[in-house]
Image (cartoon, rainbow, N blue to C red; front, top):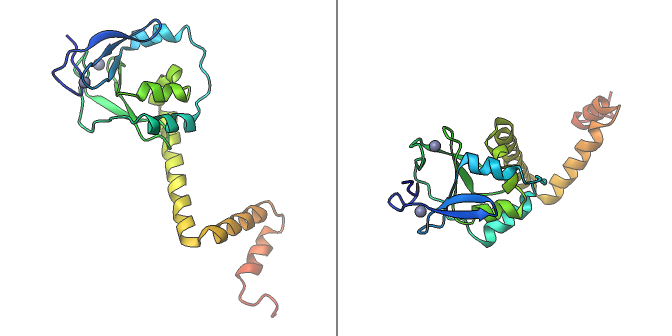
Length: 187
Ligand SMILES: [Zn+2]
Ligand SMILES: [Zn+2]
């Protein structure tokens, strides 16, 4: 019998996550084990929308997701579950078994995914381009915060405007030289 990967000794009970979407639920922690075949079958009746990151973020703050940091094991095949970040702004992860492709959803994670319309395309999250995109965005926002702290809001705003103006300017190199020169009016 499949047991909860978080609570360890609690047996998962068959339940429904949505109409025609069977799931194994842990009555103790409120988590769900979603089997790949069940999800794939249900997906056929769905029309995927486009992911609205802010809505998922907002929902996961309103109904906090209880995530455990422990290493968890697949209830079906015993392989380790791997953690996948959902997006740069959303804090929680999905746990997935890369052997049988089952997904563990902690309490409120499905609801948060649904709020942002990502529940009907969660397989995207486990792809390399999706994960790479999150990494890039995370780096960008870290640098953005660093510049903001160093320059202050109004100087940072101004330098970004100047930068944008320089970049599209055919005289860019001369303008840069003018800026860098200690005294561009002496010959
Ligand atoms: Zn549990
Ligand atoms: Zn598995």
